[in-house]
Length: 192
Image (tube, rainbow, N blue to C red; front, side, top):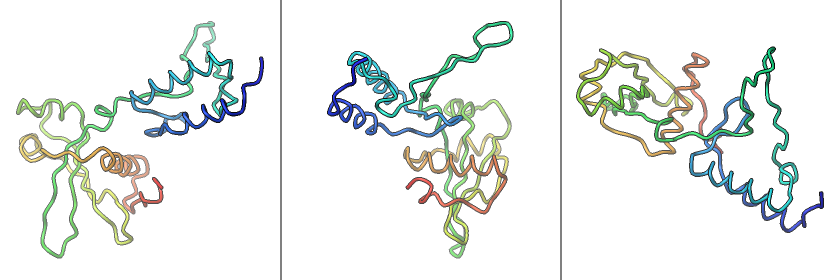
């Protein structure tokens, strides 16, 4: 296959680099639905220009996994897409304590309860809420986990964070769920 001109390679590398991932799953990048479509279009354009994926810095080889009976187990993917409206669905309540207490929020990420909230009834008598605040060193951390009664959730958890802040809170909750640590993580350096 003929090698593509360096200016064309530079153009496609630049186009791929303009698209930011939402996160990673199993060392594979995850993109929003809109960005995933743009990546598929770019993949099509590099194929039409006889450019191999590895020439623009992408993994060009994806090996499928087969079972003992020879059946395909997994469709090979080099990236994933996610609907951010579903993946980062949440509600929160701002907790206002005494003046000397640091402000916190109680964060709920139960998708089914969030979907049913507008009806006034949810599928369970309580949902898990993560109280998030800053630690002594200034990092965000899950300070407390509690069960929020259904009527309290329906009536008091009416707010949503903007997309970037929601991603940060999901990172804090995910860190807590996987490590059990309430020492906090430095999100500024994590997302720098």
